[in-house]
Length: 69
Image 1 (tube, rainbow, N blue to C red):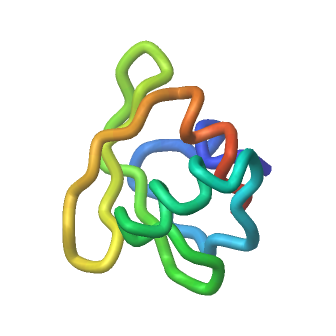
Image 2: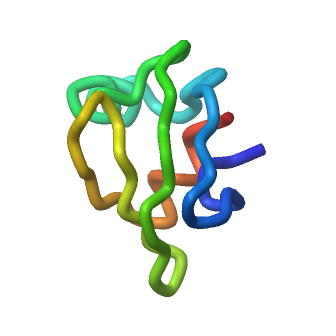
């Protein structure tokens, strides 16, 4: 399922990243790589704040659709 479907407080494993090469590279630089755990902290109008590799990152709904957990 896409990351944006996770409920706040839930933790899940990233399975794959979809999209163009530039998008994949951008998300990889933020720490979104397959095999890494991600926790949704909060959600606001589809945009997410997540914990990834001991950091908090805000991502848009469009980016969250490209991360499969």
